[in-house]
Amino acid sequence: MRPEPGRNDRPTFHKTRGYTGLFMGLLYCCLALFFAIYKREDTISFIGNNAILAYILLGLMFAYGAFRIYRGARMIQGKY
Image 1 (cartoon, rainbow, N blue to C red):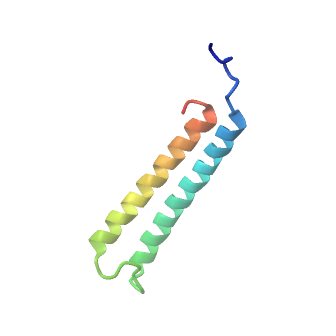
Image 2 (tube, rainbow, N blue to C red; image 1 turned 45 degrees about the horizontal axis):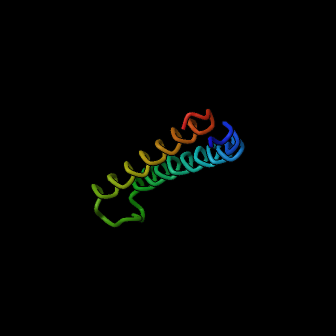
Protein backbone atom coordinates (compact mmCIF):
# COMPACT_ATOMS: atom_id res chain seq x y z
CA MET A 1 0.00 0.00 0.00
CA ARG A 2 1.39 3.38 -1.00
CA PRO A 3 1.38 6.29 1.40
CA GLU A 4 -0.38 9.43 0.32
CA PRO A 5 1.90 11.85 -1.51
CA GLY A 6 2.96 14.77 0.63
CA ARG A 7 1.90 13.14 3.87
CA ASN A 8 5.38 13.02 5.37
CA ASP A 9 6.51 16.23 3.71
CA ARG A 10 7.42 18.90 6.22
CA PRO A 11 8.11 22.09 4.25
CA THR A 12 8.57 24.26 7.33
CA PHE A 13 11.29 21.93 8.61
CA HIS A 14 13.16 22.06 5.31
CA LYS A 15 12.85 25.84 5.08
CA THR A 16 14.06 26.26 8.65
CA ARG A 17 16.96 23.94 7.96
CA GLY A 18 17.70 25.88 4.76
CA TYR A 19 17.79 29.19 6.58
CA THR A 20 20.07 27.65 9.20
CA GLY A 21 22.35 26.43 6.42
CA LEU A 22 22.43 29.89 4.86
CA PHE A 23 23.28 31.49 8.19
CA MET A 24 26.01 28.98 9.00
CA GLY A 25 27.47 29.32 5.50
CA LEU A 26 27.61 33.08 5.83
CA LEU A 27 29.20 32.68 9.25
CA TYR A 28 31.90 30.36 7.88
CA CYS A 29 32.65 32.72 4.97
CA CYS A 30 32.78 35.78 7.22
CA LEU A 31 35.07 34.03 9.69
CA ALA A 32 37.37 32.90 6.87
CA LEU A 33 37.58 36.47 5.56
CA PHE A 34 38.13 37.82 9.07
CA PHE A 35 40.96 35.37 9.75
CA ALA A 36 42.50 36.15 6.35
CA ILE A 37 42.58 39.85 7.22
CA TYR A 38 43.72 39.07 10.76
CA LYS A 39 46.51 36.88 9.37
CA ARG A 40 47.72 39.75 7.21
CA GLU A 41 48.20 41.96 10.23
CA ASP A 42 51.09 39.72 11.38
CA THR A 43 50.38 40.49 15.01
CA ILE A 44 49.51 37.12 16.51
CA SER A 45 48.91 34.23 14.15
CA PHE A 46 46.22 31.72 14.99
CA ILE A 47 48.18 28.86 13.39
CA GLY A 48 51.76 29.92 13.93
CA ASN A 49 54.25 30.97 11.30
CA ASN A 50 53.10 28.50 8.65
CA ALA A 51 51.32 30.78 6.17
CA ILE A 52 50.68 28.07 3.58
CA LEU A 53 48.78 25.91 6.05
CA ALA A 54 46.81 28.94 7.22
CA TYR A 55 45.70 29.82 3.69
CA ILE A 56 44.82 26.20 2.91
CA LEU A 57 42.60 26.06 5.99
CA LEU A 58 41.05 29.43 5.18
CA GLY A 59 40.31 28.26 1.63
CA LEU A 60 38.67 25.09 2.91
CA MET A 61 36.65 27.08 5.42
CA PHE A 62 35.45 29.47 2.72
CA ALA A 63 34.62 26.61 0.33
CA TYR A 64 32.61 24.81 3.02
CA GLY A 65 30.74 28.05 3.75
CA ALA A 66 29.91 28.44 0.06
CA PHE A 67 28.67 24.84 -0.03
CA ARG A 68 26.43 25.45 3.01
CA ILE A 69 24.99 28.56 1.34
CA TYR A 70 24.28 26.61 -1.85
CA ARG A 71 22.69 23.70 0.00
CA GLY A 72 20.61 26.04 2.19
CA ALA A 73 19.30 27.91 -0.85
CA ARG A 74 18.38 24.61 -2.52
CA MET A 75 16.55 23.44 0.62
CA ILE A 76 14.54 26.64 0.81
CA GLN A 77 13.50 26.17 -2.81
CA GLY A 78 12.52 22.57 -2.05
CA LYS A 79 14.94 21.05 -4.54
CA TYR A 80 17.28 19.26 -2.13
